[in-house]
Amino acid sequence: MISAGSWLFSSTIRNTIKTKLDSAVLDQLEKARAKACTALSSVHVADHLNLTGAVTSLSLGEATVLNDRLSVEVIAQGETSVSLK
Image: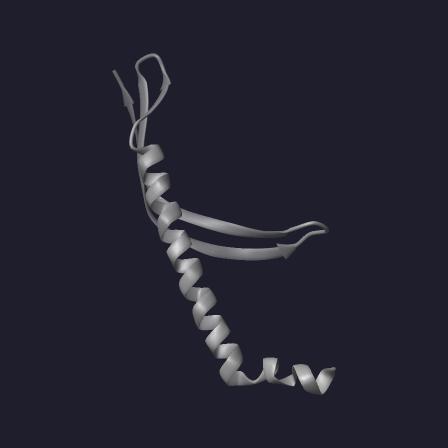
């Protein structure tokens, strides 16, 4: 079984898998960034208080393996403003 699966540990195959995963993750991060920008474009917090914001970048932080899931930290950078009227 070990020799049959040894092809998986080949650096060429590992690099191909990593490249494809990186590309998929980057696409998902860009979609998430766009959704976050849309959600933050105008948020009514309270009477006469509005919040606006833009997410300029998302990146992956620490990953933690839990009992029933993989938890990945996502770091958002951007700008926000509060408007009192």
